[in-house]
Amino acid sequence: MPYREKVTRLATIAKNINEQHSGYLDLLKKGYSEIKRDDFLWHFLLQSFSTMGRSSGWKGLIGNKDNYNQVTFDALSRLSNEEREIVVKSVCRAAKIRMPDRKADFILGCFNVVTGMGGLKVAKQNLLSANGREDKMKFLQQFPGIGPKYARNIMMDVYHEDFRDSIAIDVRIKAISEALGLKFKKYQEHEEFFLDVATAAGLNGWELDRLMYNFRDDFEREISKA
Image (cartoon, rainbow, N blue to C red; front, side, top):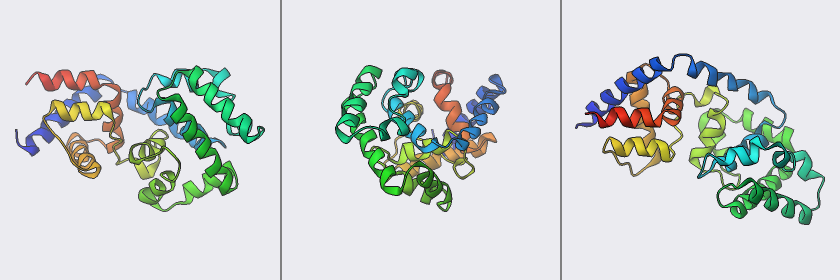
C-alpha cells in the first residue's frame, strides 16, 4: 500500500476511535494544570522513569505515596549523598520499576543537575523560558536518562502549547507502524508520518499520540481488518 494510502487509512481509523471515545481527549487536556506545580519538573522526571520500558511502574513509584514521598526533591535534599543513594535505590527496587538500579542512577543524576541549576524553581523557570519546542527538548535532554521521546512526553503530559504537534514515539506507537508495514530510520521521519496522519484526521499531533497510546489495541484491530 502506498504511503499516502496508509496515511489516509490510519487517519480514518483515528477519527472513528476518537468519535467512539468522545470526551476522552478533553479529559486528558486538563493535565495542563499540572504545569503550575512548584515541583513540576521533578515530578515528571520521576514519572518518566517510573514508566520507562514498562508503564506499570507508575503504580509502584508514583501511585504508591509511601515510595513517592521518599524521593521528592525536598525529601532527597535533606539527605547526605550516601543516604540519598541508599534511599533512591531502595525505593526504585521496592517500586518494582524496570531496571531499578539504572533508574536510580538517573534520578540521582537529575538531582545533581537540578541542584547545580540552583534548585527546582530556577530549573522550572529555565525550562519554561526556553524558546519553542526544540530549545525545551534540548534543555530536558541534559537530564540523565531523558532522550527525544521523554523530552517530548514530559511536556505533552501537560498539554503544553509548544508540544501539541508532537509524537512521542514509543513501543506502542512503533507497534502500530509495524502493523501498517512501516519502518523508519530516523525519529523525525517517524514523527512526520504520524503528523501527516493527524492532519488528515483533523487532529493535532498530541491528540493522535494520546489516542494511539491509550487505544493501541483498537488501532491494531482495525488495521488488521483490511
